[in-house]
Length: 221
Image (cartoon, rainbow, N blue to C red; front, side, top):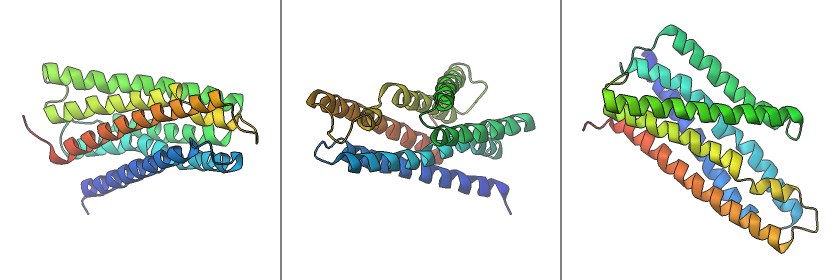
């Protein structure tokens, strides 16, 4: 059996569960911002969102090592064994970190792990953007322009996710309210943050769709 085809199949599955679950989160946000819903209803939706959120996070983490296998299979770059092994260690560790943040949510450990996650997103975004820009300007380390642009946009995805993780926290505000609800001013802030989060989520969807297009069509220019 062709192992390259298997990795391609796994890559497609990861992409489907990543984007599909994230769209589910997007829909939940559109309901959670509704101040006419009861506190318990909004609280239940938010708890559900935290669990659904693990699907795009874990699949995003695993796309990295699977992408390395595809890079090697498409002969886009001679990925050495040590880099493949590192990719899997990093991918599994990052996915586990997300699950640990949910498991220990509200504790000092979860807060520390969240800071590690944010630093990782900042770093990995920079690495992919650097590789993409350098390849476009010099033709190395990647010779295919479409692949360089793909990695460049993939780096932007990391930064958009980082922005959502650090700047926009409408769910946190709602969870702090009691059965009596938020003040009108707090509700307005929740709505503002939710709209900003949804706008950034749309930007991420556009980036992911562009990345998928480049990886599928492989345009030559």
